[in-house]
Length: 110
Image (cartoon, rainbow, N blue to C red; front, top):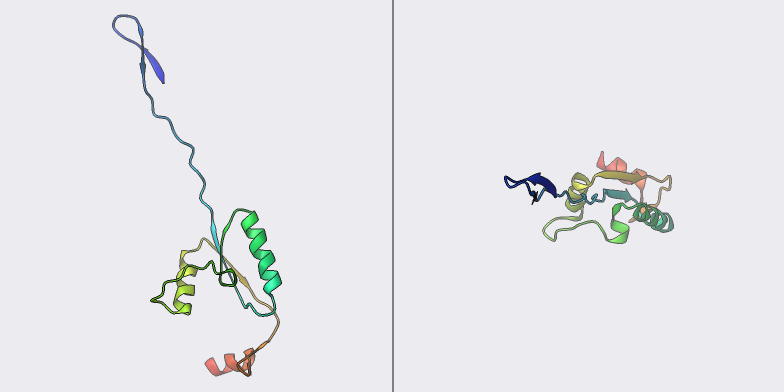
């Protein structure tokens, strides 16, 4: 409130704008990785990032936003576009997927 003098000499109080503090928004970080064999690492990364105040999107934790009219791949791409930060975890483990190694699958795609 600010005070100003009226014509009669008395102080007149007029309201001034008060500014509410702006609550900072959480940054959203998407963590992308293979899951099998590194579940403990993913749990630790999730806990650490949430303790630092991030909103963590991780499929391992079921926190990636999904729409039922999209495929898993489309939901993943949409999440990557919407997140503020992206963390990709790449391991050296060449695990087998449906009888094929990662290398064999990559060769078949290219």
